[in-house]
Amino acid sequence: MSAELVTELKTSIQRTARARIVSMLGPATSLAGIVYVLVVLRRMLRQVEYKPVLEDWIWHQVLPMIGYAMLFVGAAGMSHDQRWALFVIGAVALLLLFVGIHNAWDTVAYVVGTEGEKK
Image (cartoon, rainbow, N blue to C red; front, side):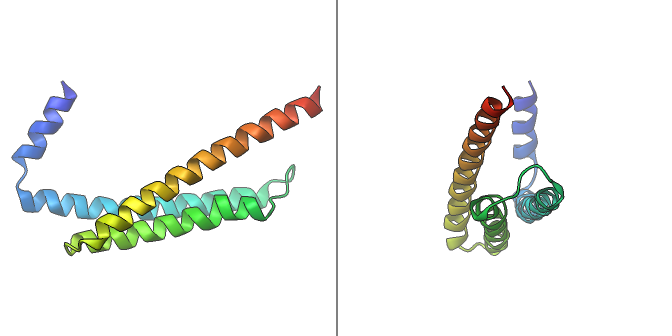
């Protein structure tokens, strides 16, 4: 039901209005991602149980920040109908997917590793 409503909404909006909405979603998403990376930075600095190593800084700060900055550039390119912007957004999607997989695996390894120390 809701999917049908969304489909009807998309078809009823004029093409220019739809393009305007999409062109605003890209920068908004990238800025939200940058804010989230900064929240993660604050949490990394405040914790005391674990001291982050270089790998943690790269995978939790550097790569996501690069990804969200590239997403902003790709979104800006999309708003100007640049063909290369699609490739940038695709590369960002892959980068953030790999970062998410790595960080999830890292979290599981940490939890399993510290679980044995507690027992």
